Length: 115
Image 1 (cartoon, rainbow, N blue to C red):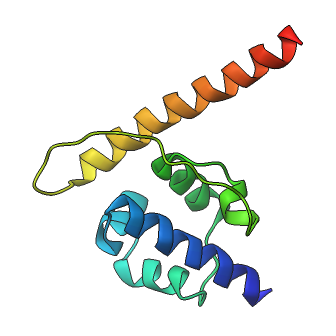
Image 2 (image 1 turned 180 degrees about the horizontal axis):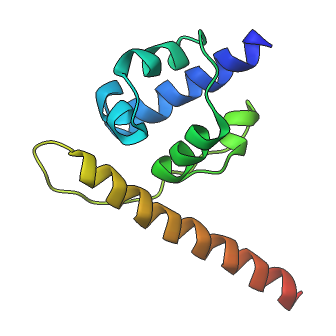
């Protein structure tokens, strides 16, 4: 079972770094200590489903990115201009991503109904 923690933790680290977030940013967003994020990324601790769901929204990806090694991840494009990212910024990014993910889901539903 530890192997699945390794995979999820490694994916969290990749997505975090590709998004330009620090462990401290993610810790503040999730309301936990930075050392817990480090343990998640190292595969030393499991992450709760609730926290994983919050990260899915923040990174603008599907849960399959964490569950499947071969899942494709296409990041949502957002442009932010700031010298640093604050806690409120992460909440805003998460809300925007949630809207975009819901819109993509609705588009897929409408396309499947048209067939």
